[in-house]
Length: 387
Image (cartoon, rainbow, N blue to C red; front, side):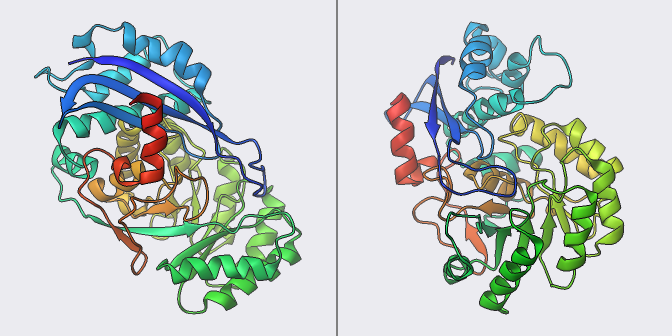
């Protein structure tokens, strides 16, 4: 079997929302299709992928650098020993040929987007949901029931506290038991009012996590920590720059509650440095590495090895991104859960149409591949690209 074609289209996921660092008025994503010559159930197998929100589309890198390497490679270079399916690790090594170590930058996003499409194709060719394929390969029992939390609470133009309360109430009413909101994009007293309003709204029905999106220096991070530790928060996320491990370590000495970070680290080497020097505590803190931004699932498995070597359970990982790829990894490899965007970044966020949130969890459907075919608005956009 072989890859016949790789297509990329840069798609808008623009919104008027903003967090503490960026607005999303010009945000894009790369949609990728890996077309194979394999036919299943009368349809050519096409694997699909896209990059997570917060990083722009990577069309140039995909079309000019990484896709040509795969298309120019001999077919045997990319397939497994049996010759009847792609080997994701061989595909990954081919994409990364002639690339210097370090300097992960945006190339990790381009590679991760293609990698998602490759794994989708591999699981479809095998005729299995990706989460079951992963569990089989790792010799573990899959858990189709996955914890998810609702991410939102962005700053909108003219959005007041009452509107924020209504948004968070809508997530609780849809079955979520943890909701997340943004902080750091307003004066601290305003954010205190917002936090208290949400906590009052959700009461004992759900827990609240807050996310500063890396906005703070150490002084601001500790001032917010002083305010936030008055409340029973699920976590305090990404207070400072993602690579400022000293800030994270200092904050861990000051803030006793759970913290979360990692979504803007894009390699297993970066993950290892965070765990070495970031002062994180494996009994309460959370890691948010996102495979779609960090070279894909092949690299993510190396990141999980780094976590285990540092004494961290995969259960302390709840990936960023809110996409079905991480949802499959969570179910197949025993992660702690997955982020969810119930209303944002559509059609890429969310779950297959039949999936409902119950008591903060979803149950994975038995759809071949990543399961994109079960989400009608998303698969329509995908098939427009390649089928």
